[in-house]
Length: 109
Ligand code: FES
Image (cartoon, rainbow, N blue to C red; front, side, top):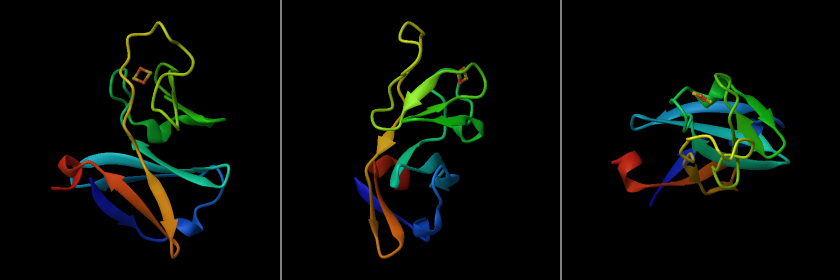
């Protein structure tokens, strides 16, 4: 794991979704319930960007076919029988107004 600092995360409001790239990996930072979540910005179904999806309670729903992924686990929450991979979820903590995100070394090297 490698720690990545996302500057200015403290300014994100409730329900805000911020897509970003880190070393070619498409990611999302989301604030919900006062907490920050970091996840892949790539649907586990056919790879659409989740940044254009809809945030629901505890999940983000892809705008293409409507599959929702848990912000906590990355697993599908609404269609358990659909052939769909879970998405990557990365631990986040806040420090000094920034978000510190633990990413796999492959995402930052
Ligand atoms: S591409 Fe996201 S649900 Fe199909």
